[in-house]
Length: 313
Ligand SMILES: CC(C)(COP(=O)(O)OP(=O)(O)OC[C@H]1O[C@@H](n2cnc3c(N)ncnc32)[C@H](O)[C@@H]1O)[C@@H](O)C(=O)NCCC(=O)NCCS
Ligand SMILES: Nc1ncnc2c1ncn2[C@@H]1O[C@H](COP(=O)(O)OP(=O)(O)OP(=O)(O)O)[C@@H](O)[C@H]1O
Image (cartoon, rainbow, N blue to C red; front, side, top):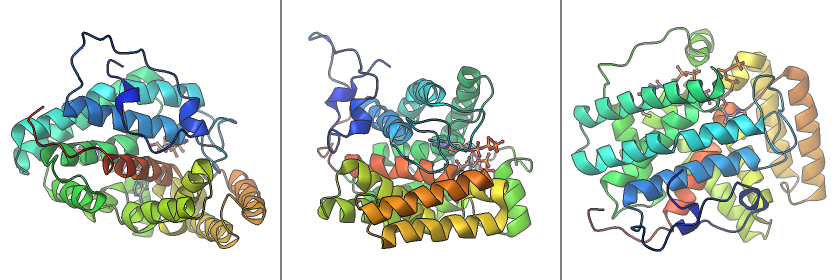
């Protein structure tokens, strides 16, 4: 990764980000990173922090692979770093094109598919970040197109408008797990979540993150609480694919119980979290969609703290 993660205003020195691999220091003579580079830094950092955050139920984290047998932390980290040029290119395209239209949608779609191909090359064919490329790609482009308006509501509204545009080159995949699950249960998936302006992030992830921080939960617990808040309502096609509707209902109720018990900073909440994790592992259920949306939550939370950008860089 060529840009310097340390130049990004991250929220707090979390144990998660503290364990992320340190970037090489930028040489004095190197030019300051442009907007697209800083957005790519933010997107990759959000993915790294999500991957490291522990203990996440069913997901890959610092303790292990959760309910997955083809994923591990090293692979998630490698995949996240490999996606930096994809996010940078998406932001650059939006900055240069500067209009929310079909041309930009087609370019971002092509870059997203190239990013997926890059991910699959790096991971040897394993889906580490398909949903995250979609969500963070749209958000990076939406941020870059109006860098003077970077609050979460404005950025998600622009991302929704971009996601709603037709991409004529998009192959209509009927064979993805998401497509299969949508057909079977009639639920909205990753595409609809973006087209609706990421309600799981705006109404649940960000609200809970800030609520838990305000209650002095500590950054790691606040991020875990944000993940659980997203899990309480999301029709996560990863969970549905692996555990069916009964599995999704039990995951949503379990996440709700953790928050009702005071969240991850409380002993009672941590007990509920252990119970949720035990049940999810028995079902092989993994909330991959919620994990992607937690990364989107962290991206938007930090983006709102980035100084307003008015120049062209
Ligand atoms: C829309 C995408 C995610 C495909 O979705 P689909 O549901 O068909 O596929 P698939 O099951 O393989 O992946 C969906 C992923 O989204 C995440 N997810 C699952 N449920 C949800 C949900 N309810 N909300 C948000 N994300 C979810 C999961 O991580 C899952 O792995 C995307 O891959 C796509 O169409 N890309 C085309 C390239 C493109 O247009 N890119 C442009 C912007 S980046
Ligand atoms: N920490 C994480 N651990 C596991 N999955 C994650 C994590 N963070 C994000 N995800 C998301 O979860 C998805 C992977 O889930 P899953 O393995 O169920 O997908 P799949 O490859 O479609 O299904 P399967 O492995 O059942 O064949 C990825 O698209 C990724 O975006």
